[in-house]
Length: 256
Image 1: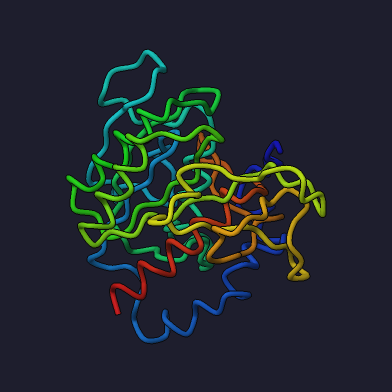
Image 2: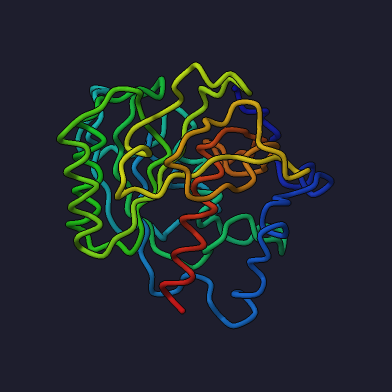
């Protein structure tokens, strides 16, 4: 599911922006002054375009656990996934419009995926543990695997034991009504994780969203406008992008 790259904001302003923010009625919390100020979120993903206007100067920690061959302090997103996820969770105001749920929160980047969006379960676990060490309030994990791992499960359990929710994408291996195919991704499938599936603008479960007994929430995950590396914007789809909406919601509720 490749993103549709848009370009500059003047063109995007003619689009339907991030409709998910209206669907989920985040304005009910924004109007009370809850926008993530003083809160810290951990992003376990492919890094971030730290020069992007959506979150420039709000990154307070970062480490590269991926196998992309770059130094441990190189948290730049050479893929796109982490930038897009972060934009939905805490993207700032652009052209007087909100893009993200918690636009005044601080960001900790645990880069666990490489340039093609792949990463080991150990790297994901390391990223989660790093976020715990950094004292974040919520961890967003829009990555996963159909393989299980004791190390990864222990990392999730450690975060939750420290009062930090770990919000995970359910996965995009959905097969519609074919119940004979097991659709479980980890860490989303762990009991301690919060598992998020995706719906579309009509409130229907998307064709790609995994269906299983672990799903706790669904959120919009199709045709969503968000940040893209090199200061650009894109329309994306996937449970990866429903996940940060729930993470942002929990961040605002913890602030409240």
